[in-house]
Length: 247
Image 1: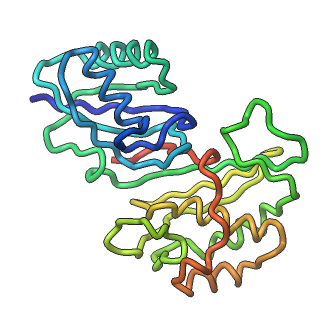
Image 2 (image 1 turned 120 degrees about the vertical axis):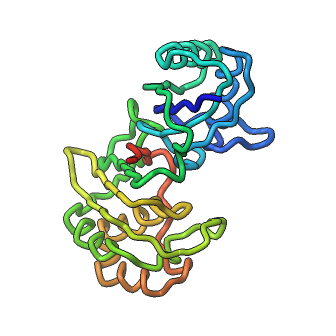
């Protein structure tokens, strides 16, 4: 068996998330179906991260195994052709044959996310479903200052979904930067791994700071509370992008 790595871009708007789910349309299942249509082999795709329904990716990574050897470019192009025929909003950016011990999930050394807020009064036209539309003026500098209280190794219970299956709420957040770029506010988060809903929970809390309702001290107090009830609102999924995975 040969192991293949694929780098994937997708618009998550029409999917129930990355992970295959009975009776629902997922990114994983769509790609597995396209691979089977191309080569006739049933595969199980393992992804680097299980993005939620509506979340997008610019650099998701996955691996699978095939019994027959195909050129990497052939795999990329053939799978893309079948994804296109099926009307999927998924693109295989790259494919490569990798070592047998490569694991898209467990070999990953870092994951990087971007969250986009479009901060203006007029409604979104081109970016509807691609960003969180917030009409009240946000203070990006205050949001960034508060975000630095969250960087480092902490118990992130406050910012963890009750459905999270991680064994421990302790994670090391390497980066959480907030910057205004024209009408947009971009929040970039980096860590080896994240808890379920962690990034969206952090963004929703930082929005309260941007609006002037919370201070950096309030954010730190929420972190130290280790209580989900202390979290701000969870930001919607459409503004979140998995940017890349490091190996």
